[in-house]
Amino acid sequence: MNLHKKKYFDYLDLGIVGYEDAMALQKKLHKKRCEQIIQDTILFLQHPNILTLGKNANHSGILAEQNKLSDLGVTIHKTDRGGQVTYHGPGQLIVYFIVDIKKLNYGPVDFVRKIEEIMISLLAGYEIKSHRVKKEIGVWLGGNEGQNLSNDLRKIGAIGLRISSGVSMHGLSLNIQPNLNYYDLIIPCGIENMKSTSLSQEKNTDIDMNHVIEKLLNLIEIYIYR
Image (cartoon, rainbow, N blue to C red; front, top):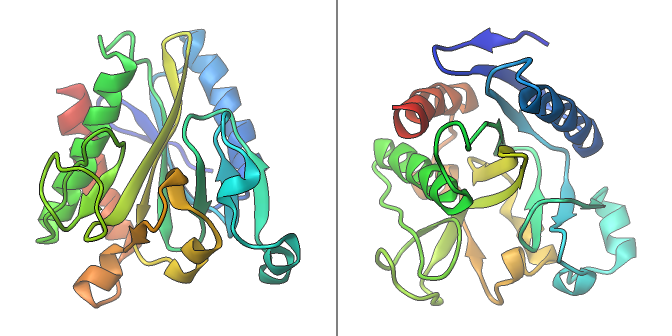
């Protein structure tokens, strides 16, 4: 596990990591950040096929029976983040932010907006127009900025955060080239009939995950720290 240093933050590129291991690492780093032992640390990783439930979510958002989930090797984890049920798996990039947002003078909503802007800017670099949706969190394709939810929208990026003692945990999930069929197992983010898409599907080509991470590192520095 090699810690890389940028000007404003450290980061780890972890590859595929089990959810419980990633949570244990987040909690360890969060405690150290709260105690000012380390600086802001950002984790880049992917998870095996799992469904995660936000702290106020229930199993009603899971459409598949337990035996089907077991056959597919999909596990379910309850989390302490906000939000409803979502899918994580190989090909979906996870970015966990262990960031002292209080020190940066961000409120939780400010920080969510910054993360959305990072994803929107990243996708623009691939010539994909994306935007926010009114009263929702995350990034969509199709339609127009600030519109209400509608069937012509396709979600590509999700956000779920927890802020404790002014320091964030969890973060974003961005579909680079996952198997989108897994979204049929759930009501993603509690939104009925929501369509999901990915960067590779929109571009109709394979996407280099390392290239995406390099772009995100630069955008995180620009949008969060400058």
